[in-house]
Each structure stands twice: as C-alpha cells, then as structure tokens.
Length: 114
Image (cartoon, rainbow, N blue to C red; front, side, top):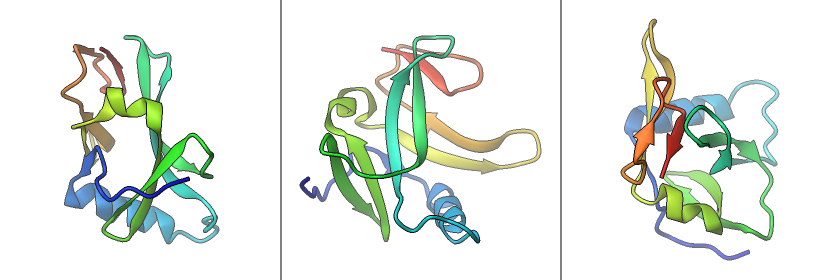
C-alpha cells in the first residue's frame, strides 16, 4: 500500500471544509479514511462513491490539506481531473462532481457514463 503525492481529483475549499466538519462529528470512527471511487449503477451507468472506509491492498492513499484520501487504483481512469464541490444551500445541499471524463450525466449529478 503505497503513498502518492498527487491526487487525481481536486476538492474546492467548501468541500474540504465540509469533509473536515464530518470528521469531527461525535462518534466519527477515526480509523476510517475518506474514500473516492465509482461503482456500477445509477440511471446512466456508474455512480460516484464518496464515503469513509478502510484502506485495502487495491487502494492508493493521498493527502489533501490534512485529509487522507483513498481510491482504488483502477478507478483513476474514470476520476482523473474531477473536481468535488460542496453546496450548502437549502435547495441543493450536498457534494457535487464535475467530471471531465463523463460523456453523459444524470439530472441528480451522482450518476454518469464514460
């Protein structure tokens, strides 16, 4: 399990603030690391993964402004160049994904095709 210095995705300052806030909520499992990835499903073929988990042998680990991030090496082809943002508004609250690799996205913004 190696360490890489260049994360293939970027986070806006609002996204980093929200992730750090979540990591300081009472009951947060400090043994878990932020995971970025993809999985099959959703209305256009693939869905983004953004949660906290445990590193496996398939993962690379990155450091972003004090936040450890893990991602399966194979997911880089789908995610390289993507920007993750946070919207805290009343009508559209949550993380958003701006992925230049997506040929098509769904209306909710969490599903895409390549």
